[in-house]
Length: 385
Image (cartoon, rainbow, N blue to C red; front, side, top):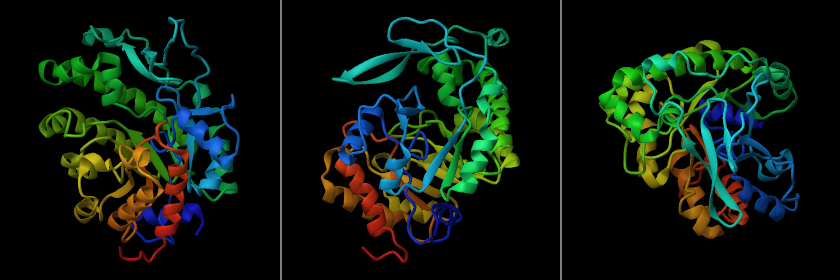
């Protein structure tokens, strides 16, 4: 099979020739900068180059070079919205920057030569409902965001055999909301000021639908998967009760997912970290086709997940990056990959990937071992463990 045929079979709950591999196909299945530079040196494709491109600047997740993706046997490629033309980042302090939503990010260093960007100023922290009308929202119809996108997507579709993951960048609600409002404040709004919460979500829905619509008008015919993302849980459980989710957030997501499905045949990929098991039925109900990253350190027995949800959900991820990938050896990585394939792969419905972006503490040899193990153990019919 070609990569595209392989992924299409898997997401349609059929067994392809082998389990597909996604590494670098989107912002939640790629590698953080420092880890990627180590991998390039390991593969002898260069390293510490000045031209590394980002899939996500905020989270410092890279767009892998084509030569690296081919060496790893990656089946997916990313098609994403471009930077705006009519907006330029405003001035900010040393080590900080503002994004298109007016959120201020700052470099926070945790180790030598390693840092993450974190939100340090929440522009709607003290806002009321009336302030939402005067806030300088980004323009989802900025022509730069889709300039040449239809041509690029069409070319990639016709001239390659990879599965294409679309990312409009206008897709977040809960995470974007707390980055604008403040994490603690938005949690309190759920209970103390639900009117403000709903007004904010309505505004984000309007903007996200406008931006996503333009993206799908250009790329929708060519993509097989449409990536969305919002973390709704910690490792121990949900950030809020299922009742609050169903009352205040679920209707927003349903409107958004219904809109996406009206514009493209691509399957909806939903990234949400943590223990999300208690909301999987809700996510299926509102149109989610694919769940990612399948955080195995939080969600429990993957064989049981497959048994309960495998006919209705595709699992995309599942290879542990919290313990095995950074701290295990090559044999540990192989064992982890084999286990997840055995648990999640029968009948199709599984795309192998690391649990979220691979961090700098993962040895490059383990990244290569993960990719090789998918090819070694992922051939259908799957061999019993």
